[in-house]
Image (cartoon, rainbow, N blue to C red; front, side, top):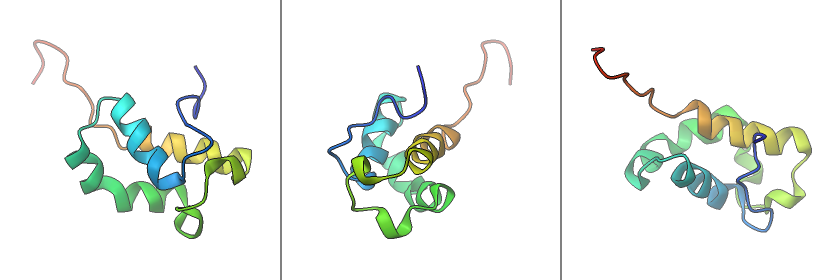
Length: 80
């Protein structure tokens, strides 16, 4: 599955951050906490409230990657 394939093109960048975060298992509070970092990483500050269907393909992928990059790593069983 490609980066950004979970996005809804009709939703804004802001809305897609929450959608992708939820799909990836992030809780809303975690997304809220990391929101500014995700936006800065994706470099979409000016376009945050624009539907992603208006984004270039590179920006679209960068947004999806930014959300995934801010996931907390899972600890494997038996490791601490």
